[in-house]
Structure formats: C-alpha cells, structure tokens
Amino acid sequence: MHGIFILAVRISGIIIGLYAIKAGASWVYTASTSNDLAPLWLLLTANALMVCAAICMILFPGIVAGILAPQKSASNNQSLLSSYDIELLAYSLFGLYLLIQAVLDASYLTSIWYATISLSYPWTWSPEYVAMTVTMFFELAVAIFLLFGGRVLSIALKWARKASLNPDL
View 1 (cartoon, helix red, strand yellow):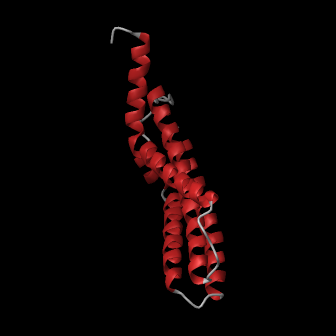
View 2 (cartoon, one colour; view 1 turned 45 degrees about the vertical axis):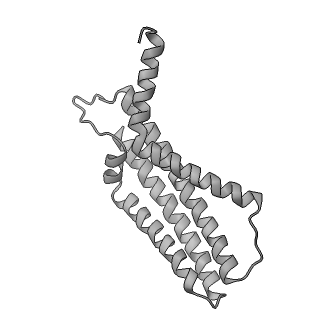
View 3 (cartoon, one colour; view 1 turned 60 degrees about the vertical axis):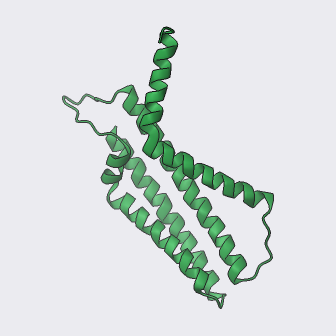
C-alpha cells in the first residue's frame, strides 16, 4: 500500500513539474514584452518553488510519502494496514490533490496580477476572480487540514461510528 502512495506522490510531482514548465514559459514571454521586471521576480520565485517541490516529489517520493502516510512493516507478504490506515491514506491523497489545485489556482491568479501590474491591462475583481480566490484559500485550508490533521478526522469518525453502534456512550 505504501508503494501506491509513493507512486501517487511521484505522479503529483510530475504534474506540478509540467505545470511549472508551462507557467515558466508564459512568464518568460510576458517578461520579454514588459519593461518592468520587478514583479517578475515574485513569479519566478513562485515558479522556482514549484520546480523544487516537483523535483523533491519525483526524486524523493518515499520521504514525502513517509511524512503523509503511515508505513508499517509487512511479514509473510500480508498487508498490515487497517481500515484506519487506509482511511488516513485516502485523506492524505485527497489533501495532496487539493494542495496541487490550490497551487495551480494561486499561480493563475499571480500571473493575472502580474499582467495587470506590468502590462497595465484594465482589470477589476469580477465575481469569477473573487470566487476563484475564495476557492483557492478554502482548498488550501482543507488540504492542510487533511494532510496534517487527517488523524484527528479519522479518530473523530471512528468515535462517531462506535457511538452510533453503542448509544450508551
């Protein structure tokens, strides 16, 4: 089971890396058409962080998977993962997915911000951008909770299941 999570981390790293390459290429084009390079450093820093995260996820998926999911030793080729462990693994994978989505939304909003600042595009906060920003922060909050608080959620659900089976609790 841990091998599946390692594979998921590596695939997520590839997705982040491909997006960073695509975003970096568009930012280089935008920089070549702009005279103001100051906001470009923010975009390049964000892009460099995405590339570093992708490289770490591709080259060291076991370390990332070890942080996000429990690893138990198996004897006699039997899986020792309980339903609690599988539930925790599912929360971690979903949290990783939401984190990737939040990073992609933040990159998109940052590129729009850069275009309006450096290229003087007329831009206002339309309902679409407000919704995207709120969604991005919500995705980020839920992702952080699932990645680092998934154990709390699993314990609460386990308690709720026991309470529903035993009304005397």
